[in-house]
Length: 210
Image 1 (cartoon, rainbow, N blue to C red):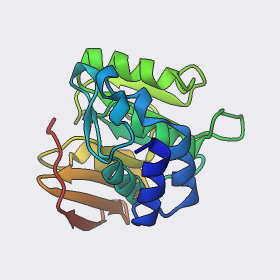
Image 2 (cartoon, one colour):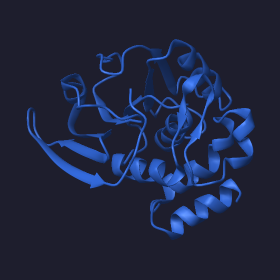
Image 3 (cartoon, one colour):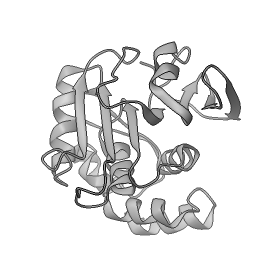
Image 4 (cartoon, helix red, strand yellow):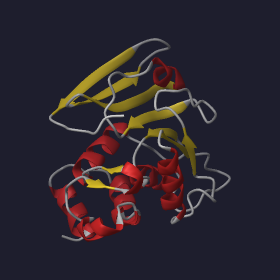
């Protein structure tokens, strides 16, 4: 199956339902973020390994989580973990191919593995996301505070966590949301007030852990 065919299947199956997410999936190719030996499988709906122990999520899961995050043009997002593919998709949604003076959107990526952070940077620069100031990659702990570009409109974690850190909750604005896997569940936590949150749970997922 080609990547385009996979995306059309995701639309048919209801994982992708917004035009912005579909356009971004078509623009940012999964094959640019997987290890060379797995590029021929980039269009398959299965998780794949990237280099430096990075993880490239299953397309249906990635689409489901991005739709839950609901990124919009001009927003600022924090992405924790991954190979750069999901941050690239989100960057395309909130900024497009090229940043302009009228669009302040930005994606901050945190990768705990130092070599992995360098690879994420290299992968995203294939689309000029780094040099155009659309994505900023940091090497550091997954649960540390990265408020340089905050407050954020959303936080998405691409590996499983034991809990949602308080710093993530503090870094999002009211109306923002956190999408994160805990055990076999994807948690969506929306900030409804200064210290108030609503939570939804979606079951049946499996992620490598931080």
